[in-house]
Length: 67
Image 1 (tube, helix red, strand yellow):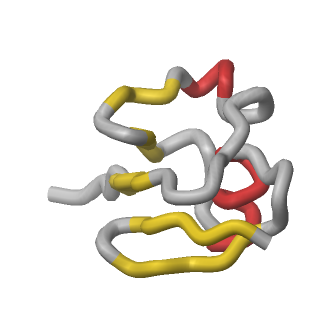
Image 2 (cartoon, rainbow, N blue to C red):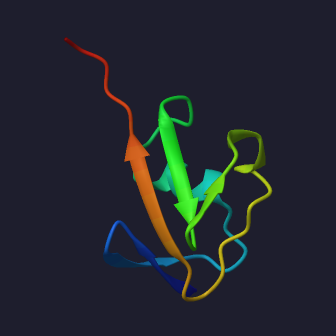
């Protein structure tokens, strides 16, 4: 297990987890979301390859439609 920070909260995830794995664990769909890891935007097409490391800091923003 490794420790990461997601939107300001510490979280434990499996070693070797990717951004896509984290989004699935959080129940967040990949279509309407932006992910920043260590102050760099992760491109959607890289979510499945972007590995998480111990101490990584992520910000996840979900886009919500409405009016």
